[in-house]
Length: 223
Image (cartoon, rainbow, N blue to C red):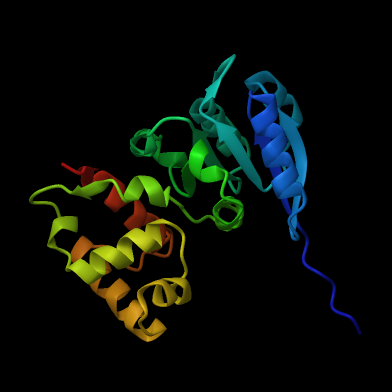
């Protein structure tokens, strides 16, 4: 018997710039395993189009004509607790993720609009959002450094490299390939950085999400 193929990830796009929205729609719509179910340009259109049970991931522009993507995301997440959210912005505003209400704070991702033009990165971020992961823009992560006295500053150079790649959404296998080390070594580094950051095996929290948010919280612009 031929196995039934998995259901595609259903994606909604909320972006007010028609050309950019069309680019996102085309890129995601032509990707195997993804299906664009809504493509709108305002908060009001999104509220009408995005219904519980009909969408898995919402791509939200932060700056919209009748509101902002963050407030929209909070509202949508409260209506649809399993909804993955990927914020897009023309600005470096990743730290806004630290101000989210605690009841909806898990599993948000962030890409700059420049980075979202990379098809591989965009698709990877959407797939990660669909399973509740947090992905932070790798280009923006390259511009930050640990704050003095923070737990992140206590990490070894290799642990910090692993943490940045983890926060950018790479799997252990992907991190190992990027750094040229064995996947088992990556897991050892992940375990060590979790210990340094005080991230435990709480079944109600995804440790990779917690680690990504700690990186965001305890870093600042590189001098």
